[in-house]
Structures are given as structure tokens and as C-alpha cells.
Length: 262
Image 1: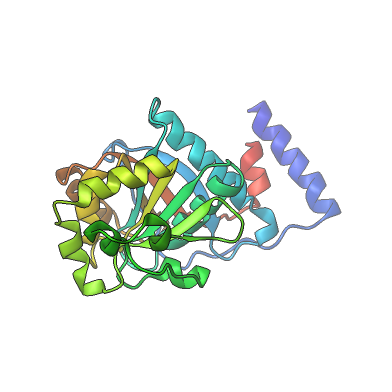
Image 2: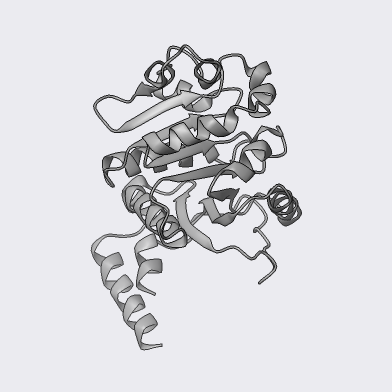
């Protein structure tokens, strides 16, 4: 109680010196997650929708997310991580991109961000495109360097599974796919799979059993519990190792610095 009291007193003093923005009004029903029914931890609270960016240490959130993932997989030096949401609009690609960037720039890791969404939102966001997809490398005659593209002078690289989106399922079913994953794992410290929404495409489920861990992205206060539960069960049935849930776009109704002090 004393800690809460001190935090509130501090808040009063801060507000007198620098009035805080008015509380945000919720636009959606609260997300209902029955306790202990989803046996995966919340790994990080990320960008709350509509909140001033100066109040958010997004980069530190990504660092904390990396440290959390690293602690869950001790002894695995070259990790493969899948980010997947249940539906479009949850910000899965944004989280995957920022996580990859921070791991490369701040954590000094060699990172490959692999876009397996047929719409290629990650490649479009960076404005970069490799010479060819990984499918051509897998067929032989094309080097890995031609199938990946470096982001400026960082240790972050981008690639796509294939140029022709219609071929994605066939590529995933190829007997050579396991050899491809081994090549990528050997080359990079971290391979991040940016997957399409689980309810929109089955492509993500085909990756699930081949990665070290899966991070489920959930849009807080909007994505419904039955949808999350269904996706979670399907990921597990496909052999997925669910590391945790990232609640994205979470709203803060009092300043975040006050949450951090309570």
C-alpha cells in the first residue's frame, strides 16, 4: 500500500508541474481472457493505440521481448521464431519488423526477417526486394546472397519465401525445405518468420512445427477470446511451441509512467 500511495503522491506533484493528457475512452469491449486457461505468459505490453509516442519506450519493449524469448530457450544460440496473429490488423508484421530491427541494431545479432505473408507487407514496408525468393535458392543454382537483401549497413536482412504467392504452399511442402531451414539457421543468429493471419491463410501453420518457438500477437481489447483459443489450439496441434502472447495496441487510461511506479 505504501508503494501505491507514494506513486499517487508523485503523480499529483507531476500533474501540477505538467498536466497529463486526458484519459482515453475505450472504443471496444475489453478483451476477456479467463485466468489460467491460456497456458502461455504475456511477454510484453507494446504500443497502446492513441497514446503519445513520447510516453512509450517501444525500443526497450523490444529488447525486453528478446530477453524474455532468450530466457525461454537456453542453450539455443541460433533461434527461429514465428510471429503470428489470428486476424488481419493486429499489427503482427509491425511487431516482427521492429523486433528484427532492434535485435540487429541494439542486440548486435545477425537477423533474417522472412516474409511468408503472400502480400509481402514486410518487404513493402522496407521498400526493398531481393533478387529472387528462397524457392529459387532451394532449387539450386542461386546463392543465398541473391535471395536476401541487407537493410542499409545493419546486420538485418530480408527475404521472401517465393516471388509467386501461389507457389507458397508447394514450397512449404518441398522435401528440400528442411535443408533450407538448416542453411538459414547456420547463417543467422535469429530467423524471424512474419506469418499471415491464422484465420486468413494456412501458410503460417505449415511453418509452426519447423521453428523453435511461436509468439502469438493479440490486439488487446478487440480480438475475442474464442478466436485466440482456437488459434492457440491449432498451433499446438501443428506441433507449435508457444512461447507467449504479445498484447499489441493496448490502451492506457492513466499515464504509463504511473503504471510503472505502481
